[in-house]
Amino acid sequence: MIRKILVANRGEIAVRIIRACREMGIETVAIYSEADREALHTKLADEAICIGPNQLSESYMSMENVISATLISGAEAIHPGFGLLSENSRFANLCEKCNIIFIGPSSELIAKLGNKQEARNTMIRAGVPVIPGSDQAITSVEEAVKEADQIGYPVMIKAALGGGGKGMRVAHAKEEFKKNFQLAQTEAKQAFGDDTMYLERFVERPRHIEFQILADSHGNVVHLGERDCSIQRNNQKMIEEAPSIALSKGLRKKMGDAALKAAKATGYVNAGTIEFLLDKNENFYFMEMNTRIQVEHPVTEWITGIDLVKEQIRIADGKKLSYTQDQVNITGHAIEVRINAEKPQENFRPCPGTITGLHLPGGKGIRIDSAIYSGYTIPPFYDSMVAKISVWAKNREEAIRKMQSALGEVIIEGVDNNIDYQYEILMHPKFLAGDVDTNFIESM
Image (cartoon, rainbow, N blue to C red; front, side):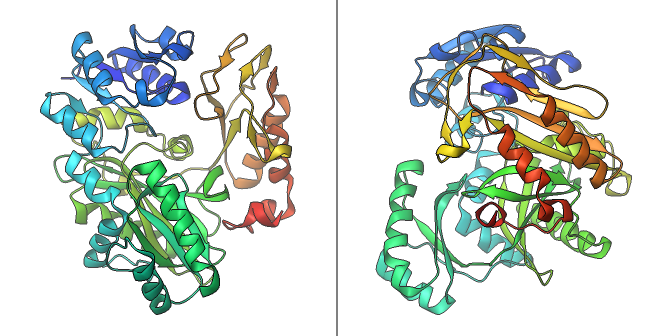
């Protein structure tokens, strides 16, 4: 039985995990860099260990430091959260070798699904719809040009080990392909240490629909409905909602069945997300599978009443899911907005600094996931997201109004933020009508 967990993350997700552990009677260990000495997660955990200087590579991304802190603390398990080491198969393998429970899938599964080309081929074999594209990994621009000519333009160029919108470019015509391929490949090498690429036919103006999966080690798999993550900037999500207004009952069943088929085909265990692109003709295509908890998991928790972090821990502890697919009930509508310390007017420039005044909204159906407090200094070394606001109401119209009201209450003094920009999206006629796709921000 897991009695102590080291949380290998920072910010709001570290706080979120620590709170779930508290409710389960599990002790927690926080890790922190020198820049995060006064961070909220270090104050909420039962103990905290400094694992290095400010730079990610020497602290949160240092596998040796994280493993050492776990062994010193006596924690039996590591929860990686999202980002950082959460989808690093080498790190998961190190945990396995050190007899530390990694709260997530096995290192073998992470490696298999982290390679986008291999994941794609797995889905083809399982009969899950995929976007037409390359069947083999591509390393040279010459190979890429030949493959792109066969697929047809526009074509999406992607890093095989990519994520978070990095190592991605669209070539709308052959004339711009070489340049975009080389840019994407260079970015992939810098971000992931690997410049292997693959190509897909570019689906124009799709919706981004993802299904939340839970799977235990006893062969039980369920999905918890979908999230619509179409509001994006540079392939990074900004607003998410559940369920999606674009899905009929029949299409939801069809996509949910495909998501279950995808999870079962890989022998998946723990929480995961199957991401699809949905075109205007209701054709959907597998895009990738994320092997971790997602930033936007609160909207799923709102509509199902299921605590995903607690479920992750129970599954890692060898327990069976306590419900079947028929027992998963979707109720109401939820929306999440990401609050970043950034300046939208200056190309979303990150704006670290000290928070001099803070008021966050409350009330029925409003949830705040955050690690900031008045007097807290946001360090310049990490992601600019400082809070997530999520709301629940009985229908989409009420949920939008509730989110508009909640954003109107937020006060964050001392640092620039994107609240006004998010409010502008929530007031946009196309958003209100549910007429959105992944190009929404560019067309505003």
